[in-house]
Image 1 (cartoon, rainbow, N blue to C red):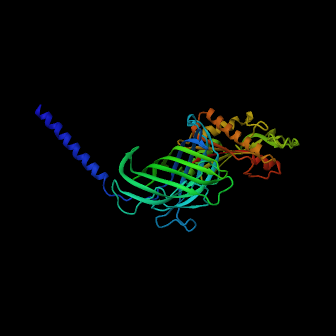
Image 2 (image 1 turned 90 degrees about the vertical axis):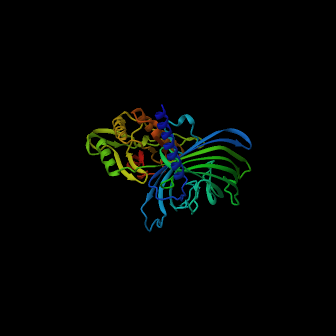
Image 3 (image 1 turned 135 degrees about the vertical axis):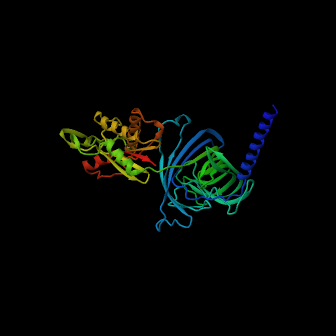
Length: 446
């Protein structure tokens, strides 16, 4: 009995010593800095209560996704001496719903970004369009610090929570407190707490923009200990926007931001596998020609007319040779599949039955790509009806997602957007050009 007590006492002493050493190690002086993180993703989800002119009007839920990829240092990007040059895209998804987290979601805006990041967290942004939202936040002191250390630093924020397209850059001074090292999702992280406020007066407001932004922010921050990448931030905010017409909008709630490292695709290998699955080669099939037909007369200008594509619908005339009608090309965002001359029932988002084999092939190919998001983009020919073309392109992108989900791919892996006829690849004055412009593109995002 005494021997057992002695063993238990030894175990308790051993673990107490280990715990003390572990605690001392986690309170060693540290230097906070951002290094070359490699490629990383950002997922930002906002959940706010909205008050218009002091009256509660409902909940607002937005989402922003981004993939940020470091670029080789060179004369063109000015990245050197510890500065890293990044490029990527921010996908803005407005008015998301809590029960849509496992559904395909529509993209409201695609914002390309390029910026230089310094070791202290400062950003230099090219062609600033409001992203990244936070600049120089979090900011890091230059000296070694311990748990409990406090500091202040300048930062700024691109404020456009109402998505007017006219962000204002608001400077602020943040107060930070370092709270030590801990384990988060299996990785070692620094915990920081920060607070800042803003009372910004816009002396040159846009007619549809903000004249004043007031508010307060309390932010919990977790940074990877190895490279300083923010892996989690919770921003509890209370902010009021005064518009040019004198009205006010107040937002109260929180924004959660998740950051994670990503492994880039081996594009050569992936493209080779996709080409094999998609059978991108000449193979027997029906030849297709187009026959022009007259365009319907314009309707009431106050009503968005339907898009008319009847003037050059494809007609099958005889067996012949055709390829799969799918192009593969690497792009900045990842790997893009372009489904050329996609055939729909005229002026609708319904695929013609002849497209089913291509849809089967595309689904089979995408199932080979695990853990990636697919961006589906719809395009139409331009026939002089921009609003109708935009609506039709959105519906066709959504329909492509539905067909691929029906073939076994999870809906939450898709985001989609329509561009109408704003991104032509062919001449809209010819049948061939309009045929080329009617397409759906699927990008496998890094």
